[in-house]
Length: 72
Length: 268
Image 1 (tube, each protein chain N blue to C red):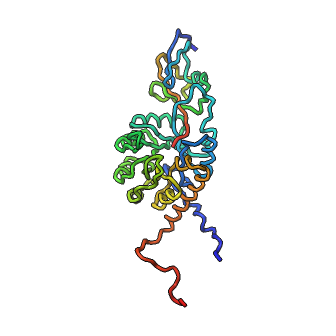
Image 2: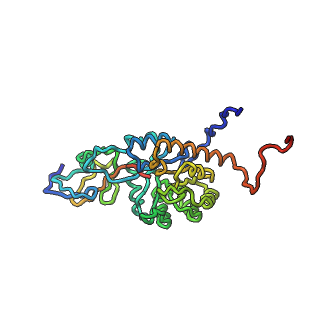
Image 3: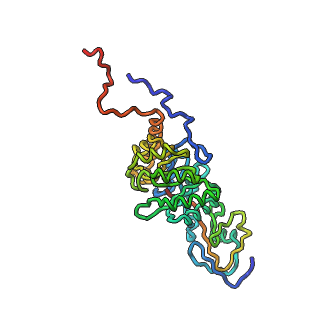
């Protein structure tokens, strides 16, 4: 993974500072999530699951990670 | 002596209904909100005999990714998940939510609800219709929560709704079907399934919905907030079957005066 000085991501509304620039697959793994059970949106665009490893994150990205919960 | 119940008293096994090309034998769709925990939720869905459950889409909890997940209890292999847009107040929010749901689940059958205000959760029909058109253009199969207005129901159908889902009364109110006339008008004109969604409080409400000719009933709070949710789920299962059977059987006409059931001839 490419080394960068520092980068900021907003994940589910929380600001996160990272010293490296992950792709989506690495981010999901780093957060301890099962990629098969979530959906990811990057800057309001869906990231298809098949493209997680190929989608490099960039400084300032706004990420949403969602899953199914109980609801009526 | 009364005769034993004949096998024909069981509901006809071929009485299935189809929405967006998927066929279901259960006419009871249950929600997965408001339960004590996911285990109780799963037990209630089983007791209800449900084949389809509604689910919500929310942010994952990043501080505790190991918390229990719905899919580990109410398994998507067993129940068809119907992702909803609960909490959405604009068409754009609803479309964004369902795009994510499609990616998370890998299926395109969804429930659209666009609400107007937090106090009534009454559907905003203008916004609902606009969102429906966006979703249909993106290839979604959309079951639409709506008011019990036959005119809007027709517009939704014309815009490509996979099912029309009018409220019986407000979400979570348990007031039953307040306007059976409009539900009946919607049923008569619709060529897609009609599902009463919201308002059912107890078993007789579910039976009433089915007696009006609805294809199915969707409920959450009536089961989840009963004192014994599992038992109420079972009651709802029977009520939906009873209502459906009564509808198919064709009820007797209403009469103003009495009509004796025992013959008058041979009276002593």
